[in-house]
Length: 117
Image 1 (tube, rainbow, N blue to C red):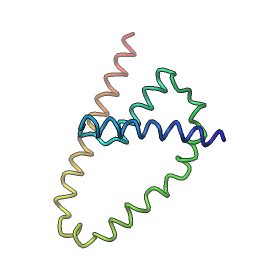
Image 2: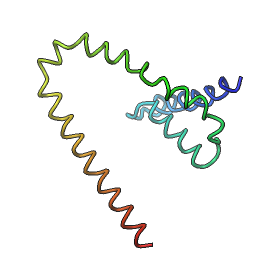
Image 3: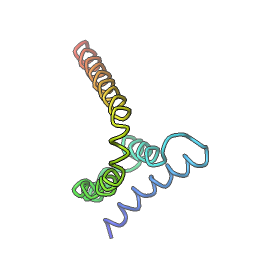
Image 4: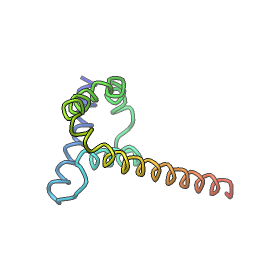
């Protein structure tokens, strides 16, 4: 019963995010908004970690299962991906580089700020 309650909390946040996304026509996916809501609730201690820990660990331990459908989709459209390979790879590589640089700068800023305190 505890696991069901924990999944209920997680799915409530997911559905709340979907509701917000659809109701206010926000161009952010509902699942992302739901995860932000869950994070805010965890940080503010509205939801305690123990209230979702077992369900979250179960999902994390079985994470590989969630990649089966996307992998099958990639295999099904492999011929199209081959035709547009460069158009896919260039933005992907640029995005990765930008993400790494921004992450590095944020970490440097946080470290220097902590050292200054």
